[in-house]
Image 1 (cartoon, rainbow, N blue to C red):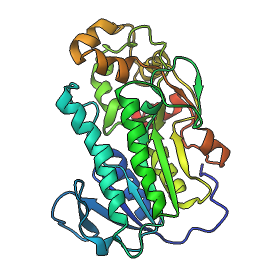
Image 2: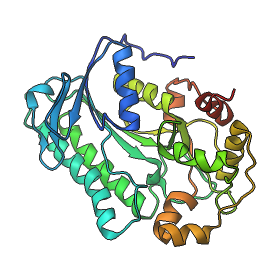
Image 3: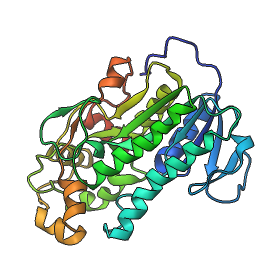
Length: 312
């Protein structure tokens, strides 16, 4: 199944990508190559191979010749929000890697004779905060909390590119599902051992999207001039944590009866991190992608997990 192409034909593009070595970035770069587009990987070190250019987040672009006249720059870099407890130092690193790094990148466009025509910046469904069972499309107001505040500032920094770029898109990612990394990969061992279960009562909505659909949606947003501003990158099937737990149990043929109490998570991770990452509910829907005719390869959770885990 393929998404409907934009109205105008897509010629081979020249696209730069930050965060190209990450889970999403690597998938996106591979897909770009498969479709015949030229990729420039922006790396935070001395370039070691063809197709790489140096980028220093604190200073903006260094190798400006490598990014002159880009069709699009897709900005995916940022510190992991789940790799350690949220100390004040850790939170500052998360904030700076997104807000300050994006602002520096955007400022660097003003030094180019031909800045990127399109700037696509990652964001997250954390923008919406903890909103219970209210359905949230791209018009919904931001929520409260650390992640929402970071996303609001992050998107504001990205919108600075409207001064130099023809179009800016803000891609609000849900939980990206892949057996190769991210949240799902971390869950597999305990679930395979029969130790998986819902988090607390499991009623919190968990926006999700398969990695393959993220790559395809990034291509679509990079090439479709009718898509600008916020775009929710989530699958159309809404799922609570309990729904996800049961679906993963079915895919692995394992029981999922062991509930993880909220207090245990708060002790292990700290109240703020546990509440915002695992206990918050965001019932996010992909209104913009759906309106623009994007067809998901994995619209349903059971099918996505079976495809990823080879169990169907």
